[in-house]
Every structure is written in structure tokens, then in C-alpha cells.
Length: 406
Image 1 (cartoon, rainbow, N blue to C red):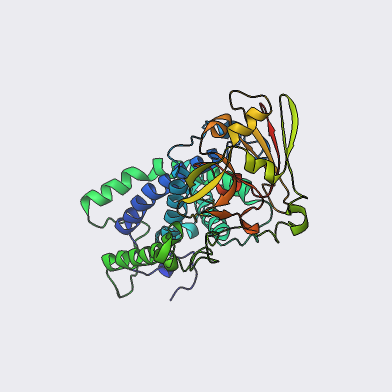
Image 2 (cartoon, one colour):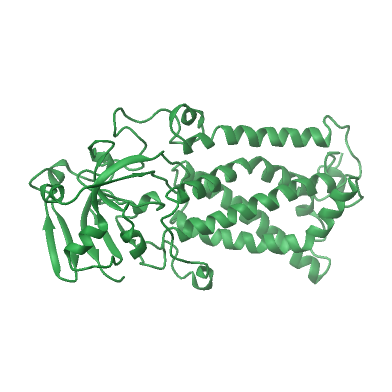
């Protein structure tokens, strides 16, 4: 038996061939296209062109061409987008691994380049495989809140996505005609994936597809529940925000950062110690929590949805409209706002919101949730809540609001 992976006789599985590779490729074609589009939308939801504090991927240049003002309707837009992006990404892992397994002999083909065109194809294949593994690995680590990779997740995942998708398009252009022909004919063609000395089959190709599909279904069922409240969340066994709610009562829903993690000391948020600085066209106004309670109070039912894919159902928030606070400092029409938190550690201690977000009547400086005061972990004494915004832009422990064009 030849034990060198560079020898065609080394790869003996009878499952490998154009038909299996084509079926897996078509599934990935649709899935990865959706992943790329939802990834771009997720990035756009941060309004990264509004302020450097929102943009964790500097020097993006032409790669930022798609940016637009992120809407506030429907209020569940980011929840849906990120739920699809993360759940689909996890679900596609068995398909990706099966696809890589089906074509692995090509990575060991000799000579490595038979022509210039073949060399370009091999380079695109290496970028495709490396980019796919990089994107899926960093994505899964981010979902698990396990940041073992060097640097920030945001630029790594962003630029990795563009490298991968460029290679994906090149590979698509080269291989789509062959894949469609294989699927139409539903028969095996001889090519370099078909083993020269096949081993005895232990499962059919359709059986292999059922196995891959079963793995994807299992990952889907143990991930998707993090997008829902109630018993279904307990099925999200692979998600950090799966399982039961982390607490009891009106404040007992999911969070990412605790007050202790953010370095929030109880003494600085106590009545008499904390105040909110609101700055704008007419100067700065300092408001205590009692002052805020004397302003008109409004309610909105909005979810919390985070980049890691988890979300909550609509919570009932009550507080002061951001547009009313803008009016206190001289703005009849809502402008942009720069938000600063008491938080001392971690990303997004500062955030910027666009004028359309400030103007939405559901955008609040929330003081209460579900009929009770905010708990420390949910942002007491005051936090931002905006429809359709990523969770990190719903700043907790707010200390200053600066209204004006950013």
C-alpha cells in the first residue's frame, strides 16, 4: 500500500468523485452567499462610517462601499440578521468539512503547477480553504466568547471574509459549469477525485450525505435556541447564552458584560453620586436620576441582540426619549449622539448613534425594564436602548451624551 499522500493510490475512498463534491458545493454556494450578505449587513448595522469608535476595522477603503444608514424598522432586524448569520454558519460546519474531505487529494497533486492557469487555480484553492477555515474558526470562537486569537475579532473576521469571498468567487467561476453538469447527469465522471484503486464501500454516497445532513441538523438544533426565550433556549447546548435565564424577576434575562467585569463600582452609581452630562448646542446640562424621572417617561418593547448570535425577546423598557434629551440642549431636529459609559474595561465603552436612531420615538435612555429599576448588570442607573441596533451600541452605565453632527 502506498503511504504517501502525494500518490494517487493513497486516496482510496470510493465516495470521492465529482457528484458528491458538486452536491456539497451547491449547498455551500447558497449558504456562504447568505453568510457573506448577512455579515456585510451586520457590519453596516454598526454605522461604522459615523465615528471611529464604531469602526473596529480601520483602513477598509473601497471595502466599505456598501455602507448606508442602518434603519430602526423593523425593530427585530438585527436580531433576525445576526441569528441567521450565526446559526447558519454553525449549521454549515459539517458541510464545509465534508467538502474539504472530498477534495483533499487535490491539495497533494504533483506537480503543484502544470501551467500558469493551473498555478492561479491552486493559489485560489489555497486561499479558499485557508479563508474558509479561518472564518469558521474565528466565528465559532467569537460565538463561544473565547478570544484566543491575536488582535480584535472585528478586523480579523472582516478582512478574512473578503479574502475568502474573493477566492470563493474565483473558484465559483472555474467550477460552476462542471458542478452543474455533474448534477444534471447524475452519473460519475472520471477525474482526479475518483480513486485509482478504490476500497470496498461501507456506505453509499447518499448515505454519506444523510450523515452530513444529520450533523448539520444536530448543530442547528443545539444552536438556534439562543435566539428565543422560554423552553426553546434550553436546547441551545452549544451556545454560552443557552440554558435557563441567568436570574429571576424582571431583570432576569441574558447579558454579556456584568457590572463587575466592566469595573462599575456601586458607589459611583448610587443616588447622589451619579449624574448624566448632556452636551449640545446650548451647552451642558447635568441631570441626576431624580431629574430624569421628572422628565416625560415613555415605554418601548425592544429586544437585545448581539453579534455572537444570541438575543432576547422584547423587553419592556421605560425612560426618557433620546430626542427629548437632545431638545434640552437646543436641538429641534434630532442630531447624531456620542455616548460615553462609566465602563472601564472592554470594547465599546463609547458608541455613536445616527440621527435617525436618535429621532425614533422608541429610542430611550432607559431607567426601568419590565416594570422595575434596571439592575446593575443591565446598566443601572441608565442605559441606551435603540430599535434594531446591535447590543453593544445599547450602551450601559451611561455617563455622558454629546449631541451634534459627528
